[in-house]
Image 1 (cartoon, rainbow, N blue to C red):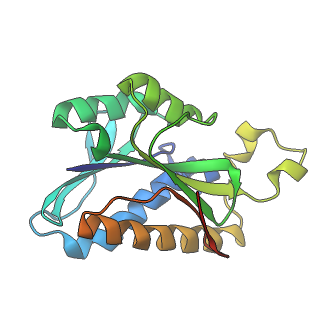
Image 2: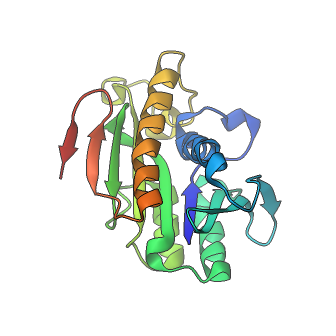
Image 3: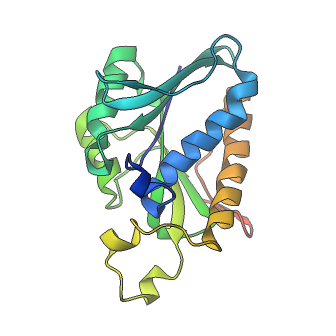
Amino acid sequence: MKIIVGLGNIGKEYENTRHNTGFIFVDTLIKQLEKEASENIIQYHTEKKFDAEIAEAKIFGEKYVFVKPRTYMNASGKAVASIIQYYKAKDDDLIVAFDDVDLPIGTVRIRKEGSSGGHKGLQNIIDSIKYDKFIRIRIGIDNNFKQETKFETSEYVLEKFSKREMPVIKKTIDAIIEILISHLENNTQIPCHTYNIIGKEQKD
């Protein structure tokens, strides 16, 4: 099975903010995978026992659970841990997608283990499930943030994407989803790479 989690904050005021990139990713992924669902119609519903919105489907011959925690970003681990326990998922069943302010916009980095890199949502997941060996998809949101002194990081990530940034984010997410689906469909290992969607792929 696969448990695919997008990180973000619930509420209209957070829609299309940089910190909700994980939500944008999982919503887009579901739309791309709907035609592959063989038994269930993919549809979000709130599960109070998980404190999350989930959607389920059988895809590529196995069960998929798509998750958007309702706990707010920094407490995402509560929802993820309860879902993993409920479904008796294995370590490598988990895929987590989220924003990364340390990566340029248009860049995606895939890792299979390691630290949170300072991302509080990811750190809370690691602390809650007691392991770090799962796929994490870091989606870059930095648009010269380091040169902009007027924003603290906490403020920057809660700003909405600009009209110029949103098409780049959508193109980036579409491209990485295409790569991800090809590996999921063929049941092959998802490679650890840094992808510059605007330029060339960088192999690590």
